[in-house]
Length: 405
Image (cartoon, rainbow, N blue to C red):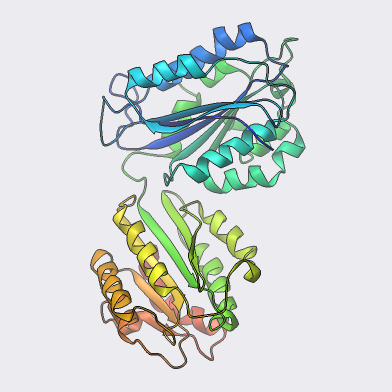
């Protein structure tokens, strides 16, 4: 299905009474543009709502390093849509794009899940920003919309989802009269669902006031937790050691204001699942399918190490913490791996390795990663999941949980 949305990144500007300049936020507006919506209502009410909402936040010309990114889209049936991707722009550029692109067109009859699907697409192509918000403007929401895999993905990736009811062309607002499905979409938060646009703009209980509570200043983007896995023929017998321990460990960590990433490398490439909420990593681990990965041949350890280094150098977080399961029985480009491992260690001291090597050929790689602290290299060969966790609990669990910003 194709779907539609409006995606906006935001920081509240100095011109607004609320000061939120310390954060970067992407807000995704999913906006209905079906045959059920009145063109006149859309022009006179929906467009001004989006414009007024955006006016509360910084743009490039307000703050180059901490500004809003905006995008937009509208959903109808599965074949007709309008979408604008997230982009860095001045206030004038955004308003010009809003005027030219955010217009009502009868895009046929379609369910809300079409719009949520476009939001999913935007998230996947937008690059990392943990402070994501979804705002849904729709006249109706069904249980099938709430229970779709697309909705679950957005719930994993976006800490806050808001629903706002708008009337259809017959002046029927089903979200206001039957909010159950929309509440389920909004992470089961009834206080995140508004009967209409007026309620959504309330200065005390509206969306902007709730955003400030979800992402308090000074605490956002604190720690980026990276869980890196080499999944090849050599490590497959030890897969449960990694999967079960990460799932258990993640539940021990504070979820708010941190990002979680799963990296999986096979013998060909590294699969990057992007930073997301902790539940997203658990979902990926629960559905990890060995068949998706090329297990024959030597592992792409170089690619895994390089991907970790790039993520750290993106500096989306104040701190990074890494837990990796790999082996060095087979290493291609050993000198490159050793060098890049050392660069990671120079960027963060929070690195632990679950070593499942049986006949290691490169002992420097893991030593360089942990800056020669051998207590951070856990030998997983011959151990049960509980035995490995007991070792991790003594060091890694305490260290990673204690990281502050």
